[in-house]
Length: 198
Image (cartoon, rainbow, N blue to C red; front, side, top):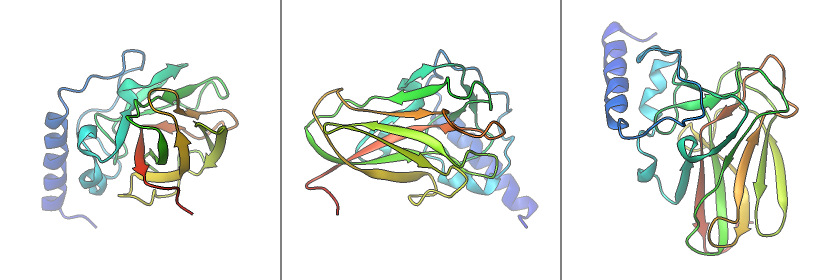
């Protein structure tokens, strides 16, 4: 049970995160957030929010710079997340929506690819994620009800070889997901490796 004092501290912490990301602009094609600042279902998770994507290691592509297909809506209701919030598919248009994250990679080589998403029982258990890398396309299905292993925010999708520049991408899709569950798209992190992990 969270005390009243702890609750106030968490809400104030949330507002400080909001102030820190004022410079970030929502994706122009996404529907606006319907939740008021401080309206949270898990206030204890605010401390895991990464307000500034630029402070993360590697190359990070936030949803603010992703390519959207179909209608996606912003939310901040369930922390943690990267930047100003995350996108969800509103449980609608299954099989027609996607968010593609394309990095500008400085060098060719192997990268560990991580996907950021918040988690709870309302999320899809089989979200489709496709990684377009130098050797092929790899599609995995992830359970967004499970807690990600890195900072309660990022989960490892695998290690892949990429060419330099903008030739690779990661696509989150709601194809084949449950009609009563939400698909989340937030950010993708590319961590350079000296050699592939085994």
